[in-house]
Every structure is written in structure tokens, then in C-alpha cells.
Image (cartoon, rainbow over all chains, first blue to last red; front, side):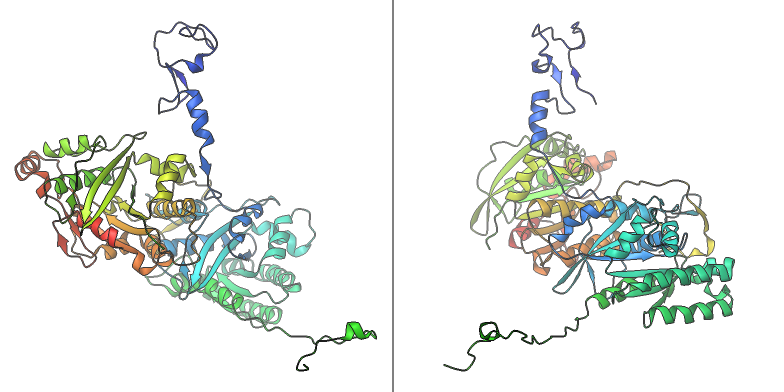
Length: 326
Length: 276
């Protein structure tokens, strides 16, 4: 509602006040502010006293990470996969499962600063009044599109802010061919900043496009493995309710290639199309992917201490303290 | 750490805050409570209409959106004198907190000065969402959406977001289990549910992720879940209205404790909230 004069028959022209005989119409007691009947001056004063929260509920952008980095070192899990591999739907199902009471085995839900964003994802998995399900449209492929979804998780005394980085499959296709592609900036950001990865293999693409799809997946996997530096990867076969329809030769060859590329990375099969409830592919494997990566990320790191060997000939620099000498 | 006795009741519009406060005051005034009223409140503007409506056998009206009235009730609980401050406000103000994601000075003061929060939730109004995680896929047709959806927040997410913004305002982090503020979750209009379940079971059914959040973030001893029917039954039929006028509001209403046991003394809810 816009501000206006509450006196219905006030003949003063716009911008002037009859009561005050001047342009100070905002000081007139008949001038109403929004809803509450406050004057403009009071509204301005009230606005000054309003404090905004640092988060909005929408997906985080990279600059928003500082909202959570002040309390813990956030873990970024990058979702890597081709177009239509089911990355966004995977996240939608993960939240939907939590929403409906499913829990991680070891981690508890301690809130989220991107609730509105999660709700938008889960909305696509809802049954519409006509009995159909409208899956999420493709994620925008412009190179500066970032979508980070936040979950705060706890395991006893351990607290983690986890950010899931989603991006379009087209961008990852470009990146897998040329990591310096100018249109793959967000894929580069995800690769550089993620602590762990979910690598999605689209089962339906392997059924439809067989060898061509396999070769794209292997290319992307090799690019992902090129500079991992020990960061864990969960290999996830999406739409796995169809996995039995992939030609055996294609599936076996891809499994061998992935095993060579990623070594001991754990392999999961997930689906958003549950058979009678509870369904392992949907209800157990979806959260198990995140649980696996969190376990990997929280494993104690082996630190190798390198003894410092003195190279100086100067006695002062070689002095190492008196120890037991008194 | 000492806990102050200021209680903040939060709840969405029509969650039953004003009805409870009106029934609470009527009962302590009539000495139908284990809590004693020390003196009549100086200003009962916040609940005057609700008391009048109930005595006429009518449903109290929701508090107007812009309304902010403070009701101070001086009571004696187990020998201890306490001023209970019930801020009465339009429930829309709570919606604004999570839709606009901003807080004004008045609310900031209410939140920071209160160490006991009572969160009113009306579970009957929360209907389940049917999605692919709870329905077998066999009979579902799928298609690609052509547009980005932007749904409003579900009730469950709204309740989580509300506690998150209140905790942020009070400068309480979630890394360590919270002992202050104490949290009482009150499932209102219990009679609408027609159930024999315990309050925690109803919350698990209706809002499982919200319960999960509370159990993770709060210390086990710092929160409780109750059922409450401040009116006892809806006042929609002439018979119900007659009965209300005959039996009088102060004799009607009940609460359900954590074990699912019914208690006619709804003022115990405040007593238990103060004992947390």
C-alpha cells in the first residue's frame, strides 16, 4: 500500500498540504504510512531500527560463504556430471528425505541458511494435483551462475557447515573438454574450492547413447581426477532403477575405467523413483552418499613430521636449547 | 548461568496465543490453578476482547497485525513471586520475521530479554505434502517442468527458520547444545487432532525435520513438548456455544503432558516452562 492522505475530501494538489499550507504534507497528521498509520517521519525512524539477518534462505553465492565460515570451516561438496545427470534432483531428494523424517546414520540436522532454496528443489518432486511430477528444469548454464545449498550437521561434539555446489551439466561438459574454457568459470570454481565431489553417472544416457555417453563420462572423470590432491569422490550412478537396461559390455567397460581413474572411491546407485517404500536406492543410498563423504573428510589426516636439519655453520643458528642441562 | 523468568510466546496467526493467555488469566483470577495471582494486572487490553468473547461462547478473534500490547501478570509459583510478561502481538509479525528476514527494535528487545520461549504450533492445520519419497513411483507420470518454481516456505521450514532467526537475534550459536533459552513447544487446538498419541509423536508425524532440528540444537533438558486445548472444543455450533456459557470458560480447556496424560489445569504449562 502506498502512503497517502487519509482525508478523503482534501482538495490540496499533489505534493502540497492544506492543513499546513505548505509542501510539508508529510508532517500532516492525516498523512498515513503503510498499514500502521505511521507518519513518514515515524516510518523512516522505524526503518532505521530494523536489522536484516545475514542470510535470506536463497542459495548462497560464493561471497555468502563468510556467513558460515565465521563459525566453522565449511565443507564444500561439488556435484559434477553431464547435462540431465540428475544433480539438482539428487539434492532435491536429499532435502525431501530429511523433510519427511529420514535421518543420516551418524549426523544430525542442525539447521540450514538456504531453506527457501531447498524448498524450491523439493517442490519439483511433489505430486501435482493431476498426479504427475514435474522435474526440475535444467540448471542455468551461464558461467557466473552459482548455487550453494547449506546444511548444518552435527555428530556429537563435531559441527560442520556443509555446502553443496550445484551447476549446470553443460558447463561441466565444456570444462571436461577444456578446463580453461571461458564459459566454464563456475565449474572451475567448484573444482578449485570443493573439499569432496559427487560424480554423477547418468544411467539413462548410457542406455540411450551407449558408447558416446560412456566416452563423455570417462573424459569428465579423468579431468576430475587430474588434480584431486586426495579429495574424496563418491561415484554415483543416478536413475539406477534403469541400471539393468544398460548393455553389460558398456557398463563393465565404464566400471573398469572409473576404477582406474578413481581407485578406491566408493560407488553408489541412487534413484528418485522409489519402488514400494522403503526403497534402498532412494531412501538409503541418497543420504549414504553424503554420509560417506563426511566420513572421509573427517578421517584423521596423517601428518608426516619432517625433522629440521640444520644447514648453517653458525653456532647461534645451530643452538637447540639446553634440554636436560642445568 | 541464571535464567530470567520472562516468557516469550511466539506463534503464527491463529495459533491460539491470545486464547491461552485469556484462559490463563481467568483461571488464576478464579483460583482454579496451582499458580496464585498476586494482584490484578494493571492493563488487560491485550486480552479483554478474548475474555469477553469466550464468556459469550464465541471464538476469540486473532490479534490485529500491527497490535503490540504487553500484559504483565504478577504471580506466585511455589512461593516465588514472578512477573510474567506476555507480549501480545499480531501473529503476522512472526510471519514478517521470516518472510522479510529482518527484525525491528521491539521484537529484538522481546527476544533478547526473554530466556524462556513458548512456541505455539497448531498441528491440525499442517497437511502432508505428497512427494516421490513417500509414494511409490509406479503410478506416477513424469515430465520436465518448464518454469522455475518459487514456493512459499512450508510450515516446517517456517518453524525452523523462525527459531534460527530468534537464536541469531539472541546471539546464540548452534555449535554447542543450547541450555538457554528454554524452549516449550506447545501443540495447540489438541482437540482437533482427535488422538491419544503423545505430543512428541504428533510432532514427529507432522513436523519430523523440525523435531530433528530441535533435538539436535537444544540440550535434552532444555526443551519440552506439550499438547494444549485452551478452549476444549470449537465454538461453531449453537450447542457448543450454550455449553460454553453454562460451564464457564475457566472450567474448560486442558493440556497434555509429555507422557500424553490429560490435565485440566492449563496453567501448569507456565509452571513447567518456568521449571525447565
